[in-house]
Length: 398
Ligand SMILES: Cc1cc2nc3c(=O)[nH]c(=O)nc-3n(C[C@H](O)[C@H](O)[C@H](O)COP(=O)(O)O)c2cc1C
Image 1 (cartoon, rainbow, N blue to C red):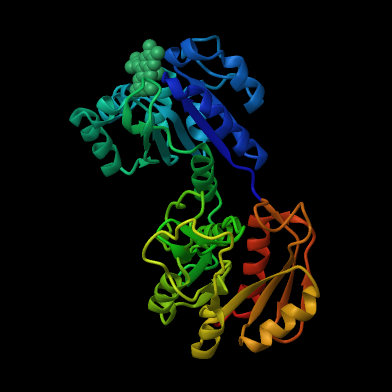
Image 2: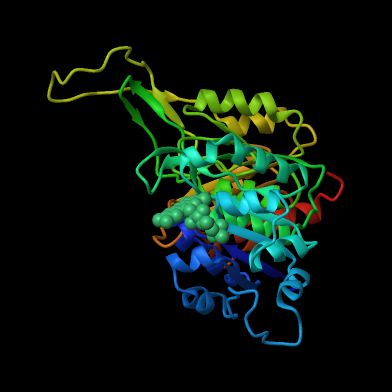
């Protein structure tokens, strides 16, 4: 993979330390990172932290003795494949929107042809100030990109919009802009993720240990390869990924309705959700009282959504997951046949370091024509990559 260079502009806001995490994530992807700090940013943190993490000299003063014969703001502007301003103050946004280039960072932004991404962070009143909003709009109109801040509790104690976006999301967005493998553009992919809830009464439900991480990783991989992705997700603690149509559901029935509504228009459907197999025969409208020593609930089979999709499928590539605690391969093989699937991803949930909740997985991918691909333990995102490599290779016509 060709090595890319990101120039990170760090400006003077309280979220300044979070830029370190973004840099560390980019460095893990072998991206060459150069940091320019404003004078105000230097009031919050010492450039040394940025220097150690980026493994490059941090540039602060435009009039420093040049380290090389090149003029630094021009050389960094030319070197950059992308510039990321994190955190971006109201001040830097205002300066760039109005053509001001009075320090190293604003001058480099002005001089670059690379895409420039701002991740703003500031007090809510500042962020919602119409002057700041107009500056943001003006920059967007010029083609500058923004990673919108979140709403939440801010450092000043106020609650509202202005909190720096999640650092993982910022790094992911930058990486996907730098390495856009678009071998799935034009394809429509539906992914299901997470558990479902089987409701007992207004306050109680039964669920399972699915974290949703596998399905979200698949959805993000498809998005980054150019597909139009719909993610139908049960309740998880994960954030809705950017650029993905995420539909939140709770029960098996809601999952079924959403999946059926989107199924016909899809090219690939991957059911990574752990959908409930059973639900209480009767849902109690009122909270069940603590009356007797024992409580007996009767459960009835709920809809097997995957099986239903296998029955109605036309040209869709249909992929299921088999989370098994015994006879992994034979159970997965019979599920693949019974449900008319094209692929099944089998994982052994008894292993404590992979599977449910974990960020890693060890799986075997079985194909319709009897092939078995055993993958070593790897991140769920890497499993997603392998899965799409196989599907794209075998189903070039899809
Ligand atoms: C403690 C403190 C926290 C600040 N936090 C922010 C902030 O989160 N966002 C922001 O836009 N400005 C913030 N400011 C104001 C900026 O530091 C100020 O506008 C400065 O001129 C920005 O300069 P720069 O954009 O060149 O880094 C803060 C100031 C102080 C003293």
